[in-house]
Length: 386
Image 1 (cartoon, helix red, strand yellow):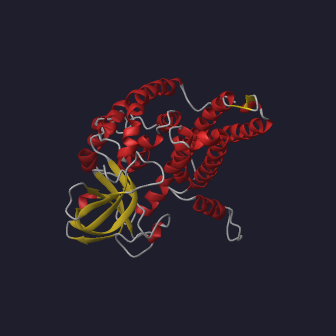
Image 2 (cartoon, helix red, strand yellow; image 1 turned 90 degrees about the horizontal axis):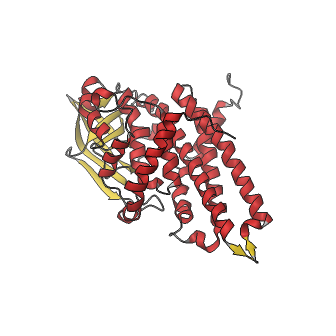
Image 3 (cartoon, one colour; image 1 turned 30 degrees about the vertical axis):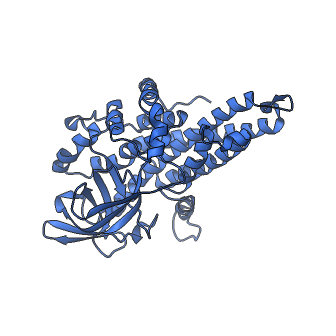
């Protein structure tokens, strides 16, 4: 079925993204995987590609805030089997940048946006803590007002771009109320008391740095407060809609790439005197996979359009996120099986997809949290209108 999501400008951009990945990322990917981090120059070249084009022109961007361009990057990174390397730049474009565009003052924009647009300033979002994951009300990192500063104490973990980041948008507790007591502070590289722990050794996504962060009496200027004090809960939950759509786009793209690799493999691999693609089991299993992917693709495309229009609900984003990531897991597992022993060899992209895809069902809210969001919307206790 023909997709109707993209316009000619997006397809022209796709050509540029393919060239960028082929020249800048694919030749270096294995080295970055071994290093456990991408170089800072990847962000500057990504800026040249236009990944941070949503920044207004007066601050060095193009002022083009169309998520379809971001989706093209996600799709092509999956096809090129280098998605983990692009996770950091994509997080800056898809997840952190919306905070800096919507919540900053004019003075903050002048300070931060030019560097973000150029890729010389790298950003991170710090929500998760050692004892708190999807439950934002459980955040304990504290920020106590002291004159024109906040004194920040606490720790964050599993922070993407945590090693490379110059600006960390941190969720902190400024009051006791579980929701109205949360605020967002931008903590900057070099502030005394701000320390980075180890680059965490993950099952997959080895090319993307994930770090522990600690704050010991970090004195952060009140001028680094994003939005109003106590308003972070609404900002965080609102922006999670975009983050979950981003993950859904990537999940479908990675599943589609895995299917393509497997179709090519079963055409060539022979058993019992014929290609294994000729076996009925292989045909039936790949028919199921192709159908699931296409059905998911059209739902996610609709989510992208509604995200652009500002009409996408948190419930629909949750549906997209859990369904597509669970589907991705089923697809990757089945395709590893069809590759046989070669599917377990890391020189094959299918094996790397196997380890890289598992986190999709956990980050930005686990499958169980997504189902809870959807279940609550059904008003199963009959306490109010749906």
